[in-house]
Length: 254
Image (cartoon, rainbow, N blue to C red):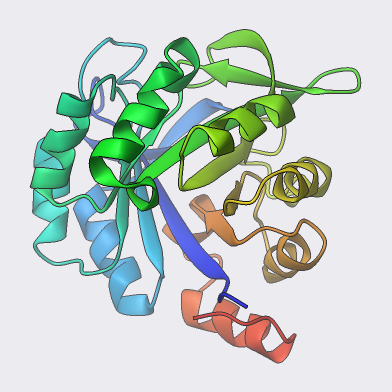
C-alpha cells in the first residue's frame, strides 16, 4: 500500500497582493498568511511531503502564473512542488517545469478544453499532470466551478472525475467549496465517492481543522493524500505531530 501524503497548499494571489499567500473561507473572506517561498521552506524543514502552489486569480485575470515565485522557492525546497493557475497550454506548463515545478495543476482550462489533459499527459507524463476539481454541493449532486470558484459550470464532479481519469491525468486535487476554510473537516462523502469511482490518486482538500480530520479522510474518505492550508500557515497543527498521530492510529504515512 502506498504511503499517505500530507500536503501544504499555498494559495497565492499574484495579481493584486504582490505574490503573498492568502487564505479564505468558502473561497471568500481572504486574509494574508505570509510569503510563499518562506512558508514553503518552513514546511520543507518540518517534513511536509509535497507543496501545492495555486495562483488563485490567474485564470480570472487571464494571465499566466508565477514563474518567479516557483524559481525562488525551488532554490531551497527539494520535495515535489505542484503549481496551478492560468495554465492554458503545453507552452504554459513547459515554462513552469523549467522554473522547477514537478507537477502542474489545471482546472478552468481542463473544463473548457478537455483535450488539454491528454496533450499535457502525453508531453510530460501523467505523473506530472494534476486536475483540480472545485466542487459545491447541490441537491443530490456536486457541481464543478472554475475561475477560482467564481463561475459554476453545470458539470457533475463525479462524472468529470471519471473523464479526467480516462483522459490521462495522474491525480485529482479535490476541493470541497462548502468546507474550504471552515475547519469543520473534509467532505467525506464527496471524497469517498470520487476516490471509489476512479483509479488515480485523490488529494482531499477543504475543511482540515484538527488531526482527527486527516485520519477520517484517509480511513472513511479513502483519500490518497490530504491537504492543509491555514492550520499549517498559522501553526495550529505542527506537521511532525500530525504525522506522529497518524502513525499511532495505524496510517502509513511518509
